[in-house]
Image (cartoon, rainbow, N blue to C red):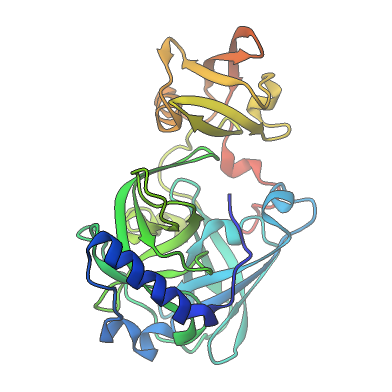
Length: 340
C-alpha cells in the first residue's frame, strides 16, 4: 500500500533533470516553480509528521510502527491535512515545523473513502496556513509543484500526466485521481501546489507508471482537495464522513486482464471468515459478472451499507463456489481508532 523509504530531498537537481527529459518526451514545456507557490510563507505551512503505532495495531505489520511523512496546516487553529495511512491507529503523533517546533497532535479523523487524515496540533504551530484551492480545472500537461517538508529542498516541479480513476488493492476507489511525474521521493502527505500557491491535492502513492498507455513513466498519485470539502465539517465534528459506512470485505486484490485475484485477506476479517483465500478469483457479485477491481467495489457498495451480506461467486483452485460475506465497517475494524 505504501513505501515510506525514500531518497533525500537533496536530490532535487537530479529530479529536475528528469522533469526536463519527461517534458521533452511528451512535447511539453518544462515545469517551473511559480513565484507565488514557491514563496517561503507558502511552504512554511508544510510540516513533518512523526507517528508511533502500537505493536498490536492491525496496520502495524503492513504499514509499520513508526511512520513519517508530510502534512499541510490548513487553518489558524492547527488543523493539519495529511494522507491517512501515516496516522492510522497512531497512539502518538508529533508535528514538526520548519522552524524546529515540535508539537503533539491528536488524530481527529481518518476517512477511508478519500484516504485523508486530519490532525489537530495541541499548541500554536506559528505558521501561516495554506489556502485550499480547487483541482477542478487541473488537467493533463499542467505544471505544478510537489512540496514535502523541508522548505525549498523539499520542492520539486512536476507535470500532471493524467486525471483518471484509481482503484487500490485495499477496497479503495477514487474517481478523479491526479497523477504527476516525475516521482517525488517523499510523496506521502506532500502538498500539490498550483501557481497561485493554493493547495490542490495531498500525496498518496508512488507508482511505477502514471500513464494509462504502455509507456512506463514513474510518478505520484494525489487525492484532490475537492474530495475533502464535502466531508470536512463532519470529519472535524465526529471523525467520520457523512452517511452510512460502505460494506467492507477485508480483501486485498489485484487485477489482470479484467480478472480480480485475491492477493490476501485481512486476518479475521469478513472475507477470511467466509473462507476466501489468497489466490481465489472473484467472478461475480450476485448474478453480475465482475470486470475489474473498480467494478467489484462499485457492485459491492451498491448492495447496501456496512453489515449487509454480500453474495460472491469465486473460483477457488478448480472449484466454483458461492459464498456470502457478512460485510463489516472498515472504520471499526481498526483496534486503535479511539482517537477519532
